[in-house]
Image (cartoon, rainbow, N blue to C red; front, side, top):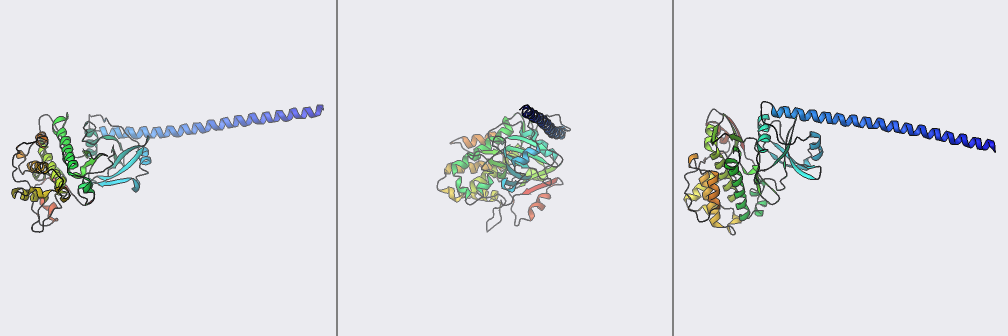
Length: 399
């Protein structure tokens, strides 16, 4: 019996020793794993901090302005967009593709990935980030963040589920979703956003690239002006400036800007007038042709105006249901905006008064700036003959 009890004690002691060693081994293994995990996290954090630091150096280089916009790590953006998958692609803009991203908290964000050959360089990227961060208006798109490194320049905007205005007004089916009231509201929203840039914000800003593809629509079809890469600030009471590098989109550029590089609040007004006529007619300024003569939309609108048939500019689906007096008022205002002489064009603050006011007697417009052309190939060559400036013109194509 004593031997049996002794064996039982030895067995129990052995199990106790083995259990103790196993526990010690397990604890040490878990500690090493934790140390490796901390090291990996530390390496990631170090990499992220380094990337963020390098981005801030790039953004603040030769600039006294602080960047008041959150920095997003590329890893976060890649995860949110599924590595920029085609399934998340929202569209292709002039400066690169735009993707939908799902960020932590199921937050939807539009991710604009600037193409390396887009023509938008570091200066334009800095300009857009630093400029739009200072603007707050319901009709301007909000910038939510940025990412920049040696290979990528990325802007993150509030997500606009209805994409851009041009996808609706130039589409034979989608255009029917925009009745006259909604189109009028869109015209007013764009006008108020532009008036804010010119007159009400603490910075006087000239957009320089206002067009239907740069007007985004939220879930309620409210318009928001986007793409401020080409925008410029004019100091103090100045309302114009000059540049040797002419950039913009054919059909929306004012003649004094295309020919002499002179841009002003009045060149934005010209672009707004073109946008109004495109919204009313459902036709592009540069893609409008009559069988008897090749005119752009401005030329056709002017001919309809002097022949007192301007209401015929209205898209056919709207003619029966639209408020004709409002349509005629908008056409009148649009033609005032696109007058050839910039001094004749109204300021945006006056445009808003004309659009809102009822029973006002509006001034009759003078001849607009329009070009009669017989074939598309003459577009760029004729534009480049205007001056010796460096000209970068985007021609609007089908979407």
